[in-house]
Image (tube, rainbow, N blue to C red; front, side, top):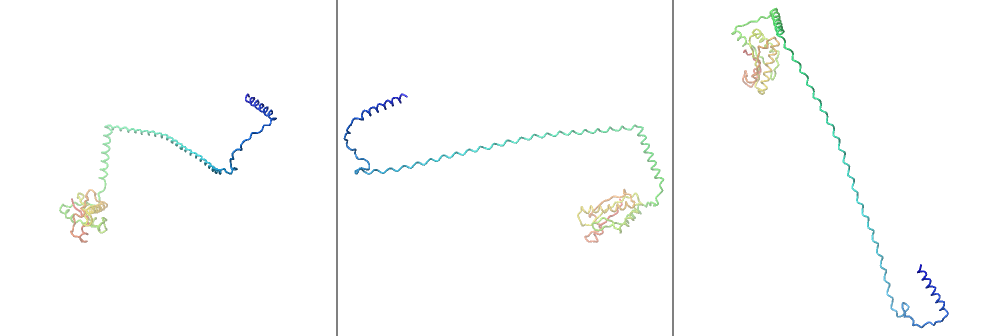
Length: 260
């Protein structure tokens, strides 16, 4: 505020001085003309060319914004652990069945009664057997010499190659042999099976046994006592005829009756 007052005072003073000096004529002093300057002077040197304006500096490119760092994917939450399955309850062990109580031993009197009953049953069976009528067929017991001679005349049973079936031709031979065997119930007969030389030893032993068994079954079917017979197989070990011809082989495929 004070500065404004001082300024107004100075202006007022100057205006007053100018007003008082306006009535006086003052010759202006002669002064030398000012030296010629600029392009209007004849002797003036040519003005230097104006310097070319400096090119404005290119604005610096704005810095590219740094790419935002990719935020790492959130780690997957671990799967919840499965709850442990409940262990199966152990099956209860089966209770052992109670052992049956041992039967009480029979008293001595009961044992004696059972023995007596068994003896009575045996007596009744013996009585029934004694009552049975005698068989129509009479059993002839020959002297030893005649028996041996008759046994040696028993016929042999022959078979086809690799067969154990009895043919109708030799069924009659077996029936004749059976007649002698049935008349000599104490005789023990061995049925020997034989084969020819063809085939392995193991196979021929089995084949000879099948042939002897076929003759045995036929004799039993006629009524022979099975306890009188013994079955054996010699395979190809005991040929009746040596040779490798069909006639030799035919005679070696046989079953012989041998008295024990």
